[in-house]
Length: 89
Image (cartoon, rainbow, N blue to C red; front, side):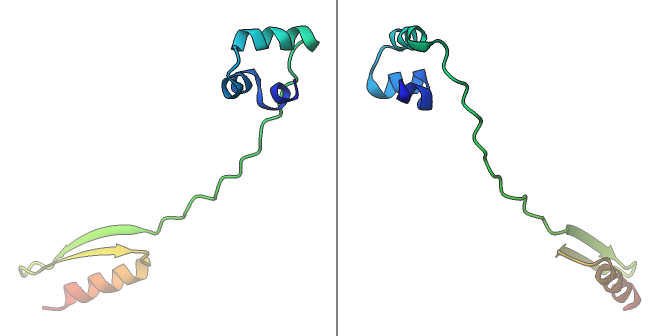
């Protein structure tokens, strides 16, 4: 009965090759219901923080275009890049 108390009727019957319903009846006649098992604690890892991703396409009106894909960027960097592109003619 200790196996049933720690692993449950279904798993014990499956592993030992016993008839589930017969084992269940034995457990009930021996002492009633099985004690409820406390849920196991499962620690989940913290979600990974994703960096910022963006794709820009600049056109300066003189026919030049530039496509930029950034990862982990700062807004000031994007501003400086765009100002430099549009001011160069």
